[in-house]
Length: 578
Image (cartoon, rainbow, N blue to C red):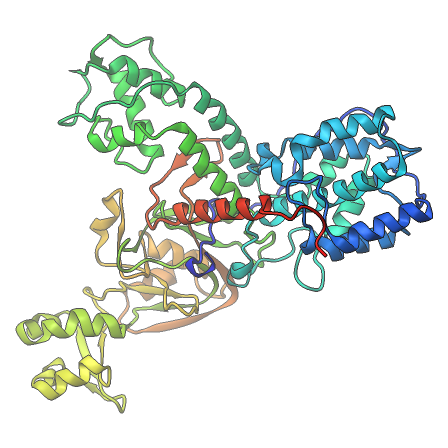
Protein backbone atom coordinates (compact mmCIF):
# COMPACT_ATOMS: atom_id res chain seq x y z
CA UNK A 1 0.00 0.00 0.00
CA UNK A 2 2.72 2.46 0.94
CA UNK A 3 4.48 1.83 -2.32
CA UNK A 4 1.46 2.97 -4.24
CA UNK A 5 1.76 6.43 -2.72
CA UNK A 6 -1.99 6.88 -2.37
CA UNK A 7 -2.15 10.16 -0.59
CA UNK A 8 -4.88 11.95 -1.73
CA UNK A 9 -7.86 13.99 -1.20
CA UNK A 10 -10.17 14.68 -2.27
CA UNK A 11 -10.82 17.88 -1.09
CA UNK A 12 -9.64 20.90 -2.67
CA UNK A 13 -10.15 23.74 -0.17
CA UNK A 14 -7.52 25.06 2.19
CA UNK A 15 -9.62 27.39 4.31
CA UNK A 16 -9.49 26.56 7.99
CA UNK A 17 -12.72 26.56 9.96
CA UNK A 18 -13.66 25.46 13.43
CA UNK A 19 -15.48 22.15 13.72
CA UNK A 20 -19.13 22.63 14.65
CA UNK A 21 -20.08 21.71 18.20
CA UNK A 22 -21.83 18.39 18.74
CA UNK A 23 -24.46 18.14 21.42
CA UNK A 24 -23.44 16.22 24.53
CA UNK A 25 -25.97 13.70 25.90
CA UNK A 26 -27.84 14.90 28.94
CA UNK A 27 -26.33 14.09 32.31
CA UNK A 28 -23.82 15.51 34.76
CA UNK A 29 -21.48 17.97 33.11
CA UNK A 30 -19.03 18.15 35.99
CA UNK A 31 -15.55 16.67 35.50
CA UNK A 32 -14.66 13.38 37.11
CA UNK A 33 -13.54 13.61 40.72
CA UNK A 34 -9.95 12.64 41.29
CA UNK A 35 -9.76 9.50 43.34
CA UNK A 36 -7.42 6.60 42.89
CA UNK A 37 -8.85 3.10 43.20
CA UNK A 38 -7.95 0.80 46.05
CA UNK A 39 -4.64 -1.02 46.00
CA UNK A 40 -6.20 -4.08 44.30
CA UNK A 41 -7.94 -1.75 41.86
CA UNK A 42 -4.70 0.08 41.12
CA UNK A 43 -2.93 -3.24 40.59
CA UNK A 44 -5.67 -4.30 38.16
CA UNK A 45 -5.44 -1.01 36.26
CA UNK A 46 -1.66 -1.21 35.96
CA UNK A 47 -1.87 -4.87 34.97
CA UNK A 48 -4.39 -4.09 32.21
CA UNK A 49 -2.16 -1.33 30.87
CA UNK A 50 0.91 -3.55 31.01
CA UNK A 51 -0.84 -6.43 29.24
CA UNK A 52 -2.41 -4.00 26.73
CA UNK A 53 -5.20 -6.47 26.16
CA UNK A 54 -8.96 -6.18 26.75
CA UNK A 55 -11.02 -9.18 25.59
CA UNK A 56 -14.18 -7.09 26.03
CA UNK A 57 -13.20 -5.21 22.88
CA UNK A 58 -13.35 -6.65 19.36
CA UNK A 59 -9.91 -5.11 18.79
CA UNK A 60 -8.54 -6.62 21.97
CA UNK A 61 -4.85 -5.71 21.85
CA UNK A 62 -3.96 -2.06 22.37
CA UNK A 63 -0.18 -2.47 22.32
CA UNK A 64 0.23 0.46 19.92
CA UNK A 65 -1.43 2.77 22.47
CA UNK A 66 0.01 1.21 25.64
CA UNK A 67 2.46 4.06 26.24
CA UNK A 68 -0.21 6.74 25.80
CA UNK A 69 -2.70 4.89 28.05
CA UNK A 70 -0.04 4.37 30.72
CA UNK A 71 0.95 8.03 30.61
CA UNK A 72 -2.69 9.10 30.75
CA UNK A 73 -3.27 7.24 34.02
CA UNK A 74 0.15 8.06 35.48
CA UNK A 75 -0.63 11.76 35.06
CA UNK A 76 -3.85 11.16 37.03
CA UNK A 77 -2.17 9.22 39.82
CA UNK A 78 -4.06 6.15 38.59
CA UNK A 79 -7.43 7.83 39.23
CA UNK A 80 -10.27 6.63 37.05
CA UNK A 81 -11.18 9.13 34.35
CA UNK A 82 -14.80 8.33 33.56
CA UNK A 83 -16.47 8.01 36.97
CA UNK A 84 -17.77 10.40 39.60
CA UNK A 85 -19.12 9.15 42.89
CA UNK A 86 -18.97 5.62 41.51
CA UNK A 87 -21.14 6.35 38.47
CA UNK A 88 -20.19 7.07 34.83
CA UNK A 89 -19.84 10.76 34.02
CA UNK A 90 -21.65 12.69 31.34
CA UNK A 91 -18.34 12.75 29.49
CA UNK A 92 -18.32 8.93 29.50
CA UNK A 93 -21.85 8.89 28.07
CA UNK A 94 -20.87 11.38 25.37
CA UNK A 95 -17.85 9.33 24.33
CA UNK A 96 -19.89 6.11 24.30
CA UNK A 97 -22.40 7.80 22.00
CA UNK A 98 -19.57 8.92 19.67
CA UNK A 99 -18.13 5.39 19.60
CA UNK A 100 -21.49 3.88 18.73
CA UNK A 101 -22.03 6.43 15.95
CA UNK A 102 -18.54 6.29 14.44
CA UNK A 103 -20.08 5.14 11.15
CA UNK A 104 -21.38 8.70 10.74
CA UNK A 105 -17.73 9.74 10.37
CA UNK A 106 -16.94 7.07 7.80
CA UNK A 107 -15.48 4.69 10.41
CA UNK A 108 -16.46 1.25 11.71
CA UNK A 109 -18.02 1.37 15.22
CA UNK A 110 -16.84 -2.20 15.82
CA UNK A 111 -13.24 -0.94 15.87
CA UNK A 112 -14.11 0.94 19.06
CA UNK A 113 -16.35 -1.64 20.75
CA UNK A 114 -19.38 0.32 19.56
CA UNK A 115 -22.12 -2.35 19.75
CA UNK A 116 -21.33 -3.37 23.33
CA UNK A 117 -21.05 -0.02 25.06
CA UNK A 118 -24.72 0.75 25.72
CA UNK A 119 -25.38 -2.29 27.89
CA UNK A 120 -22.13 -1.93 29.79
CA UNK A 121 -22.74 1.75 30.46
CA UNK A 122 -26.32 1.11 31.62
CA UNK A 123 -25.21 -1.65 34.00
CA UNK A 124 -22.71 0.70 35.60
CA UNK A 125 -25.28 3.50 35.81
CA UNK A 126 -27.85 1.33 37.58
CA UNK A 127 -25.33 -0.28 39.87
CA UNK A 128 -25.89 -3.85 38.65
CA UNK A 129 -22.20 -4.00 37.67
CA UNK A 130 -20.78 -1.33 39.95
CA UNK A 131 -17.96 -3.22 41.64
CA UNK A 132 -14.47 -1.73 41.40
CA UNK A 133 -13.16 -4.49 39.14
CA UNK A 134 -15.85 -3.68 36.56
CA UNK A 135 -15.29 0.08 36.86
CA UNK A 136 -11.55 -0.26 36.26
CA UNK A 137 -12.02 -2.43 33.20
CA UNK A 138 -14.66 -0.08 31.79
CA UNK A 139 -12.47 2.95 32.44
CA UNK A 140 -9.44 1.53 30.69
CA UNK A 141 -11.54 0.19 27.80
CA UNK A 142 -13.20 3.58 27.28
CA UNK A 143 -9.85 5.36 27.42
CA UNK A 144 -8.39 2.99 24.82
CA UNK A 145 -11.43 3.31 22.55
CA UNK A 146 -11.48 7.10 22.86
CA UNK A 147 -7.80 7.22 21.89
CA UNK A 148 -8.42 4.95 18.92
CA UNK A 149 -11.33 7.04 17.72
CA UNK A 150 -9.46 10.32 18.22
CA UNK A 151 -6.47 8.92 16.32
CA UNK A 152 -8.59 7.69 13.41
CA UNK A 153 -10.53 10.96 13.27
CA UNK A 154 -7.29 12.94 13.27
CA UNK A 155 -5.14 10.89 10.91
CA UNK A 156 -7.32 8.26 9.25
CA UNK A 157 -7.47 4.52 9.74
CA UNK A 158 -4.33 3.99 7.68
CA UNK A 159 -2.75 7.16 9.07
CA UNK A 160 -0.69 7.44 5.87
CA UNK A 161 2.34 6.52 7.97
CA UNK A 162 4.59 5.75 5.03
CA UNK A 163 3.38 8.84 3.20
CA UNK A 164 3.36 11.46 5.93
CA UNK A 165 6.78 12.81 4.96
CA UNK A 166 5.67 13.15 1.34
CA UNK A 167 2.74 15.39 2.16
CA UNK A 168 4.39 17.34 4.96
CA UNK A 169 1.74 16.18 7.42
CA UNK A 170 1.87 18.53 10.39
CA UNK A 171 0.13 19.09 13.67
CA UNK A 172 -3.42 17.74 13.37
CA UNK A 173 -4.21 18.35 17.04
CA UNK A 174 -1.36 17.98 19.49
CA UNK A 175 1.84 16.18 18.63
CA UNK A 176 4.29 14.18 20.69
CA UNK A 177 8.03 13.80 20.13
CA UNK A 178 7.50 10.97 17.63
CA UNK A 179 5.33 13.09 15.35
CA UNK A 180 2.04 11.45 16.37
CA UNK A 181 -1.06 13.00 17.96
CA UNK A 182 -0.63 13.29 21.74
CA UNK A 183 -3.55 11.01 22.49
CA UNK A 184 -3.09 11.20 26.26
CA UNK A 185 -3.50 14.99 26.14
CA UNK A 186 -6.48 14.76 23.77
CA UNK A 187 -8.36 12.23 25.93
CA UNK A 188 -7.50 14.17 29.11
CA UNK A 189 -9.25 17.17 27.57
CA UNK A 190 -12.26 15.08 26.52
CA UNK A 191 -12.62 13.50 29.97
CA UNK A 192 -12.88 16.88 31.69
CA UNK A 193 -14.64 19.02 29.06
CA UNK A 194 -18.17 20.31 29.56
CA UNK A 195 -18.76 19.47 25.90
CA UNK A 196 -16.93 16.17 25.63
CA UNK A 197 -18.35 15.39 22.19
CA UNK A 198 -17.16 18.76 20.93
CA UNK A 199 -13.71 18.13 22.39
CA UNK A 200 -13.56 14.81 20.58
CA UNK A 201 -14.73 16.45 17.35
CA UNK A 202 -11.82 18.90 17.60
CA UNK A 203 -9.55 16.01 16.62
CA UNK A 204 -11.13 16.03 13.14
CA UNK A 205 -9.77 17.98 10.17
CA UNK A 206 -10.79 21.64 10.54
CA UNK A 207 -11.77 22.11 6.89
CA UNK A 208 -15.23 23.04 5.68
CA UNK A 209 -14.69 20.66 2.74
CA UNK A 210 -14.14 17.76 5.13
CA UNK A 211 -17.41 18.49 6.92
CA UNK A 212 -19.23 18.75 3.60
CA UNK A 213 -17.84 15.37 2.59
CA UNK A 214 -18.96 13.75 5.85
CA UNK A 215 -22.46 15.18 5.36
CA UNK A 216 -22.54 13.96 1.75
CA UNK A 217 -21.51 10.49 2.90
CA UNK A 218 -24.47 10.36 5.31
CA UNK A 219 -26.83 11.59 2.61
CA UNK A 220 -25.66 9.06 0.01
CA UNK A 221 -25.98 6.22 2.51
CA UNK A 222 -29.60 7.26 2.99
CA UNK A 223 -30.12 7.50 -0.76
CA UNK A 224 -28.58 4.06 -1.26
CA UNK A 225 -31.42 2.55 0.77
CA UNK A 226 -33.91 4.09 -1.68
CA UNK A 227 -31.97 3.03 -4.79
CA UNK A 228 -34.12 0.07 -5.84
CA UNK A 229 -34.54 0.47 -9.61
CA UNK A 230 -33.03 -2.03 -12.02
CA UNK A 231 -30.12 -0.82 -14.18
CA UNK A 232 -31.08 1.09 -17.28
CA UNK A 233 -30.32 -0.63 -20.60
CA UNK A 234 -27.51 0.92 -22.63
CA UNK A 235 -28.88 2.88 -25.60
CA UNK A 236 -27.70 1.79 -29.03
CA UNK A 237 -27.22 5.42 -30.02
CA UNK A 238 -27.27 8.74 -28.14
CA UNK A 239 -30.79 9.98 -27.38
CA UNK A 240 -31.48 13.70 -27.74
CA UNK A 241 -34.20 15.86 -26.21
CA UNK A 242 -37.57 15.32 -27.86
CA UNK A 243 -36.87 11.72 -28.84
CA UNK A 244 -38.62 8.62 -27.58
CA UNK A 245 -37.05 6.65 -24.74
CA UNK A 246 -38.91 3.67 -23.29
CA UNK A 247 -37.30 4.00 -19.82
CA UNK A 248 -37.92 7.72 -19.39
CA UNK A 249 -39.88 7.26 -16.15
CA UNK A 250 -37.15 5.12 -14.57
CA UNK A 251 -34.53 7.64 -15.69
CA UNK A 252 -36.55 10.45 -14.12
CA UNK A 253 -36.77 8.59 -10.80
CA UNK A 254 -33.01 8.10 -10.74
CA UNK A 255 -32.21 11.70 -11.63
CA UNK A 256 -34.72 12.98 -9.08
CA UNK A 257 -33.26 10.75 -6.37
CA UNK A 258 -29.81 12.33 -6.77
CA UNK A 259 -31.38 15.80 -7.13
CA UNK A 260 -30.34 16.40 -10.72
CA UNK A 261 -33.97 16.54 -11.82
CA UNK A 262 -35.62 19.31 -9.85
CA UNK A 263 -38.02 20.90 -12.34
CA UNK A 264 -41.02 19.65 -14.22
CA UNK A 265 -43.53 16.98 -13.31
CA UNK A 266 -43.58 13.35 -14.25
CA UNK A 267 -42.34 12.84 -17.82
CA UNK A 268 -44.43 11.31 -20.52
CA UNK A 269 -44.01 7.59 -20.30
CA UNK A 270 -41.63 7.30 -23.24
CA UNK A 271 -40.42 10.84 -24.02
CA UNK A 272 -36.93 12.12 -23.32
CA UNK A 273 -38.06 15.71 -22.87
CA UNK A 274 -36.21 18.96 -22.26
CA UNK A 275 -36.40 18.64 -18.46
CA UNK A 276 -34.79 15.20 -18.61
CA UNK A 277 -32.10 16.46 -20.99
CA UNK A 278 -31.26 19.36 -18.64
CA UNK A 279 -31.13 16.99 -15.68
CA UNK A 280 -28.93 14.59 -17.64
CA UNK A 281 -26.54 17.43 -18.51
CA UNK A 282 -26.27 18.34 -14.84
CA UNK A 283 -25.59 14.68 -13.97
CA UNK A 284 -22.96 14.52 -16.72
CA UNK A 285 -21.21 17.62 -15.42
CA UNK A 286 -21.15 16.22 -11.87
CA UNK A 287 -19.59 12.99 -13.14
CA UNK A 288 -16.84 14.36 -15.36
CA UNK A 289 -18.66 13.74 -18.64
CA UNK A 290 -19.34 16.06 -21.55
CA UNK A 291 -22.52 17.89 -20.41
CA UNK A 292 -24.32 17.83 -23.74
CA UNK A 293 -27.59 16.44 -22.35
CA UNK A 294 -27.58 13.50 -24.75
CA UNK A 295 -28.26 10.13 -23.15
CA UNK A 296 -25.43 7.94 -24.43
CA UNK A 297 -23.98 4.63 -23.26
CA UNK A 298 -21.24 6.22 -21.16
CA UNK A 299 -23.78 8.36 -19.28
CA UNK A 300 -26.04 5.39 -18.64
CA UNK A 301 -23.11 3.39 -17.26
CA UNK A 302 -22.53 6.15 -14.73
CA UNK A 303 -26.25 6.32 -13.94
CA UNK A 304 -26.20 2.58 -13.25
CA UNK A 305 -23.45 2.81 -10.63
CA UNK A 306 -25.16 1.84 -7.35
CA UNK A 307 -25.41 4.70 -4.87
CA UNK A 308 -23.89 2.41 -2.27
CA UNK A 309 -20.72 2.48 -4.37
CA UNK A 310 -20.91 6.28 -4.56
CA UNK A 311 -21.12 6.33 -0.77
CA UNK A 312 -17.98 4.19 -0.78
CA UNK A 313 -16.20 6.81 -2.88
CA UNK A 314 -17.18 9.46 -0.35
CA UNK A 315 -15.93 7.29 2.52
CA UNK A 316 -12.55 7.04 0.80
CA UNK A 317 -12.58 10.81 0.35
CA UNK A 318 -13.17 11.26 4.09
CA UNK A 319 -10.21 8.99 4.84
CA UNK A 320 -7.98 10.96 2.49
CA UNK A 321 -9.05 14.28 4.03
CA UNK A 322 -7.55 13.02 7.29
CA UNK A 323 -4.16 12.61 5.67
CA UNK A 324 -3.83 16.29 4.80
CA UNK A 325 -1.83 18.82 6.80
CA UNK A 326 -3.82 21.15 9.00
CA UNK A 327 -1.83 24.28 8.26
CA UNK A 328 -0.15 25.63 5.16
CA UNK A 329 2.77 28.03 5.09
CA UNK A 330 1.08 29.74 2.14
CA UNK A 331 -2.09 29.18 0.07
CA UNK A 332 -1.51 25.92 -1.81
CA UNK A 333 -2.03 24.74 -5.35
CA UNK A 334 -4.02 21.50 -5.41
CA UNK A 335 -4.13 19.21 -8.44
CA UNK A 336 -6.77 16.49 -8.25
CA UNK A 337 -5.74 13.85 -10.77
CA UNK A 338 -9.10 12.11 -11.46
CA UNK A 339 -10.86 15.47 -11.74
CA UNK A 340 -8.29 16.78 -14.24
CA UNK A 341 -8.34 20.14 -12.48
CA UNK A 342 -6.06 22.47 -10.57
CA UNK A 343 -7.42 24.58 -7.73
CA UNK A 344 -5.81 27.63 -6.16
CA UNK A 345 -6.86 27.45 -2.51
CA UNK A 346 -6.48 31.15 -1.84
CA UNK A 347 -9.32 32.97 -0.08
CA UNK A 348 -8.29 36.24 -1.70
CA UNK A 349 -8.02 34.85 -5.22
CA UNK A 350 -10.04 31.76 -6.05
CA UNK A 351 -8.99 30.14 -9.30
CA UNK A 352 -9.42 26.76 -10.96
CA UNK A 353 -8.42 25.42 -14.34
CA UNK A 354 -8.31 22.25 -16.37
CA UNK A 355 -5.16 20.17 -16.47
CA UNK A 356 -3.74 17.30 -18.48
CA UNK A 357 -2.16 14.50 -16.40
CA UNK A 358 -0.17 11.35 -17.09
CA UNK A 359 -1.58 8.50 -19.14
CA UNK A 360 -3.38 5.87 -17.08
CA UNK A 361 -1.48 2.82 -18.20
CA UNK A 362 2.08 3.98 -18.92
CA UNK A 363 2.85 7.40 -17.49
CA UNK A 364 0.88 7.95 -14.32
CA UNK A 365 1.29 11.27 -12.58
CA UNK A 366 2.52 10.46 -9.05
CA UNK A 367 0.75 11.62 -5.90
CA UNK A 368 2.97 13.79 -3.71
CA UNK A 369 3.54 17.25 -2.28
CA UNK A 370 6.37 19.72 -2.78
CA UNK A 371 7.14 23.45 -2.68
CA UNK A 372 7.03 25.58 -5.84
CA UNK A 373 10.26 27.58 -5.82
CA UNK A 374 10.88 28.81 -9.37
CA UNK A 375 9.08 30.06 -12.47
CA UNK A 376 10.90 29.77 -15.81
CA UNK A 377 9.63 31.78 -18.77
CA UNK A 378 10.46 30.62 -22.30
CA UNK A 379 11.99 27.38 -20.96
CA UNK A 380 14.09 24.81 -22.76
CA UNK A 381 12.68 21.30 -22.63
CA UNK A 382 15.35 18.92 -21.44
CA UNK A 383 14.00 15.69 -22.90
CA UNK A 384 13.83 12.90 -20.28
CA UNK A 385 16.10 10.00 -21.11
CA UNK A 386 13.30 7.45 -21.53
CA UNK A 387 11.33 9.66 -23.92
CA UNK A 388 14.53 10.38 -25.82
CA UNK A 389 15.42 6.70 -26.17
CA UNK A 390 11.98 5.24 -26.84
CA UNK A 391 10.16 7.97 -28.75
CA UNK A 392 12.46 10.55 -30.34
CA UNK A 393 15.58 8.62 -31.38
CA UNK A 394 13.52 6.19 -33.50
CA UNK A 395 12.13 9.23 -35.35
CA UNK A 396 15.51 10.79 -36.10
CA UNK A 397 16.49 8.75 -39.13
CA UNK A 398 13.18 8.96 -41.02
CA UNK A 399 12.12 12.42 -39.84
CA UNK A 400 15.12 14.41 -38.55
CA UNK A 401 14.14 17.45 -40.58
CA UNK A 402 10.76 17.69 -38.89
CA UNK A 403 12.29 17.40 -35.42
CA UNK A 404 14.85 20.06 -36.30
CA UNK A 405 12.02 22.31 -37.45
CA UNK A 406 10.38 21.87 -34.05
CA UNK A 407 13.45 23.24 -32.31
CA UNK A 408 15.28 20.10 -31.16
CA UNK A 409 19.04 20.20 -30.73
CA UNK A 410 21.79 18.03 -29.20
CA UNK A 411 23.91 18.65 -26.11
CA UNK A 412 27.05 16.47 -26.09
CA UNK A 413 29.06 15.10 -23.15
CA UNK A 414 30.95 18.34 -22.78
CA UNK A 415 27.84 20.54 -22.81
CA UNK A 416 28.35 21.76 -26.37
CA UNK A 417 25.19 22.44 -28.37
CA UNK A 418 25.10 20.62 -31.72
CA UNK A 419 22.57 20.88 -34.54
CA UNK A 420 20.29 17.92 -34.97
CA UNK A 421 22.07 17.05 -38.20
CA UNK A 422 24.95 15.83 -36.03
CA UNK A 423 22.81 12.79 -35.18
CA UNK A 424 23.49 11.29 -38.61
CA UNK A 425 25.26 7.96 -38.43
CA UNK A 426 25.09 4.90 -36.21
CA UNK A 427 27.63 6.20 -33.66
CA UNK A 428 25.68 9.40 -33.00
CA UNK A 429 22.40 7.54 -32.70
CA UNK A 430 23.96 5.13 -30.21
CA UNK A 431 25.17 8.05 -28.08
CA UNK A 432 21.64 9.39 -28.05
CA UNK A 433 20.20 5.98 -27.17
CA UNK A 434 22.56 5.58 -24.21
CA UNK A 435 22.06 9.14 -23.02
CA UNK A 436 25.67 10.19 -23.54
CA UNK A 437 24.21 12.90 -25.77
CA UNK A 438 21.02 14.64 -24.73
CA UNK A 439 18.20 16.10 -26.74
CA UNK A 440 16.60 19.37 -25.78
CA UNK A 441 14.03 21.62 -27.39
CA UNK A 442 14.54 25.36 -27.75
CA UNK A 443 11.88 27.86 -26.65
CA UNK A 444 9.39 28.52 -29.40
CA UNK A 445 5.91 27.79 -30.68
CA UNK A 446 6.51 24.01 -30.79
CA UNK A 447 8.14 23.70 -27.36
CA UNK A 448 6.44 20.96 -25.36
CA UNK A 449 6.50 23.10 -22.21
CA UNK A 450 4.89 26.06 -23.88
CA UNK A 451 5.85 29.50 -22.63
CA UNK A 452 6.33 28.88 -18.92
CA UNK A 453 7.35 26.13 -16.52
CA UNK A 454 6.61 26.14 -12.78
CA UNK A 455 9.16 24.13 -10.82
CA UNK A 456 8.58 22.36 -7.50
CA UNK A 457 11.61 20.07 -6.97
CA UNK A 458 10.65 16.42 -6.47
CA UNK A 459 12.12 12.99 -7.16
CA UNK A 460 9.68 12.34 -10.01
CA UNK A 461 10.78 15.24 -12.24
CA UNK A 462 7.17 16.38 -12.45
CA UNK A 463 6.30 20.04 -12.90
CA UNK A 464 3.48 22.30 -14.06
CA UNK A 465 3.77 23.84 -17.50
CA UNK A 466 2.07 25.56 -20.39
CA UNK A 467 1.42 23.62 -23.59
CA UNK A 468 0.95 24.38 -27.30
CA UNK A 469 -1.68 21.59 -27.43
CA UNK A 470 -4.56 23.66 -26.08
CA UNK A 471 -7.13 21.56 -27.92
CA UNK A 472 -6.73 18.75 -25.37
CA UNK A 473 -8.38 20.83 -22.66
CA UNK A 474 -11.71 20.54 -24.47
CA UNK A 475 -11.84 16.81 -23.76
CA UNK A 476 -13.57 15.44 -20.66
CA UNK A 477 -10.89 12.81 -20.04
CA UNK A 478 -7.43 14.37 -20.10
CA UNK A 479 -4.71 11.82 -19.36
CA UNK A 480 -2.34 12.45 -22.26
CA UNK A 481 1.01 13.46 -20.73
CA UNK A 482 4.14 11.54 -19.73
CA UNK A 483 3.48 12.41 -16.08
CA UNK A 484 3.95 16.17 -15.93
CA UNK A 485 0.94 18.42 -15.52
CA UNK A 486 -0.12 20.73 -18.34
CA UNK A 487 -2.24 23.69 -17.25
CA UNK A 488 -4.97 25.43 -19.21
CA UNK A 489 -4.20 29.04 -18.20
CA UNK A 490 -0.48 29.15 -17.53
CA UNK A 491 -0.34 32.94 -17.69
CA UNK A 492 -2.91 33.42 -14.92
CA UNK A 493 -1.23 30.75 -12.80
CA UNK A 494 2.23 32.27 -13.18
CA UNK A 495 0.85 35.72 -12.33
CA UNK A 496 -0.73 34.32 -9.15
CA UNK A 497 2.46 32.54 -8.08
CA UNK A 498 4.49 35.75 -8.59
CA UNK A 499 1.83 38.07 -7.14
CA UNK A 500 4.04 39.05 -4.17
CA UNK A 501 7.32 39.28 -6.10
CA UNK A 502 8.41 42.90 -6.55
CA UNK A 503 7.88 44.17 -10.07
CA UNK A 504 6.14 41.07 -11.36
CA UNK A 505 2.87 42.58 -12.49
CA UNK A 506 0.48 40.63 -14.74
CA UNK A 507 1.72 42.77 -17.63
CA UNK A 508 5.33 41.83 -16.97
CA UNK A 509 4.36 38.16 -16.75
CA UNK A 510 2.66 38.40 -20.14
CA UNK A 511 5.68 40.14 -21.65
CA UNK A 512 8.03 37.45 -20.31
CA UNK A 513 5.86 34.72 -21.80
CA UNK A 514 5.92 36.40 -25.20
CA UNK A 515 9.59 37.42 -25.08
CA UNK A 516 12.66 35.92 -26.73
CA UNK A 517 14.82 35.25 -23.65
CA UNK A 518 14.65 32.54 -21.03
CA UNK A 519 13.94 34.22 -17.68
CA UNK A 520 14.17 32.43 -14.32
CA UNK A 521 12.41 33.87 -11.26
CA UNK A 522 12.98 32.51 -7.77
CA UNK A 523 9.85 32.58 -5.61
CA UNK A 524 10.49 34.36 -2.33
CA UNK A 525 7.79 32.51 -0.43
CA UNK A 526 7.50 28.96 -1.82
CA UNK A 527 4.00 27.83 -2.71
CA UNK A 528 2.86 24.39 -1.45
CA UNK A 529 1.81 22.11 -4.30
CA UNK A 530 -0.33 19.06 -3.58
CA UNK A 531 -0.84 16.52 -6.34
CA UNK A 532 -3.68 14.45 -4.92
CA UNK A 533 -6.10 11.73 -5.91
CA UNK A 534 -9.79 11.92 -5.12
CA UNK A 535 -12.75 10.51 -7.01
CA UNK A 536 -15.39 12.33 -4.92
CA UNK A 537 -15.41 16.08 -4.28
CA UNK A 538 -18.07 18.13 -2.51
CA UNK A 539 -18.15 21.70 -3.78
CA UNK A 540 -18.78 24.81 -1.70
CA UNK A 541 -22.52 24.71 -2.34
CA UNK A 542 -22.79 21.05 -1.40
CA UNK A 543 -22.87 19.66 -4.95
CA UNK A 544 -21.29 16.20 -4.99
CA UNK A 545 -19.04 15.38 -7.94
CA UNK A 546 -17.72 11.95 -8.86
CA UNK A 547 -14.87 10.99 -11.16
CA UNK A 548 -13.51 7.75 -12.57
CA UNK A 549 -10.87 5.73 -10.73
CA UNK A 550 -8.30 6.64 -13.38
CA UNK A 551 -5.30 4.85 -11.87
CA UNK A 552 -7.15 2.26 -9.75
CA UNK A 553 -6.14 3.98 -6.51
CA UNK A 554 -9.66 3.82 -5.05
CA UNK A 555 -9.66 0.07 -5.47
CA UNK A 556 -6.24 -0.18 -3.84
CA UNK A 557 -7.25 2.03 -0.91
CA UNK A 558 -10.49 0.11 -0.37
CA UNK A 559 -8.52 -3.15 -0.29
CA UNK A 560 -6.03 -1.69 2.19
CA UNK A 561 -8.85 -0.49 4.47
CA UNK A 562 -10.47 -3.93 4.32
CA UNK A 563 -7.13 -5.49 5.27
CA UNK A 564 -6.83 -3.03 8.16
CA UNK A 565 -10.32 -4.03 9.32
CA UNK A 566 -9.27 -7.68 9.40
CA UNK A 567 -6.15 -6.79 11.37
CA UNK A 568 -8.26 -5.00 13.95
CA UNK A 569 -10.80 -7.81 14.31
CA UNK A 570 -8.50 -10.80 14.70
CA UNK A 571 -7.49 -13.47 14.88
CA UNK A 572 -6.97 -12.81 18.55
CA UNK A 573 -5.79 -15.08 21.36
CA UNK A 574 -8.23 -16.46 23.93
CA UNK A 575 -6.68 -14.38 26.70
CA UNK A 576 -4.00 -11.83 27.42
CA UNK A 577 -0.70 -12.51 25.70
CA UNK A 578 1.87 -14.03 27.95
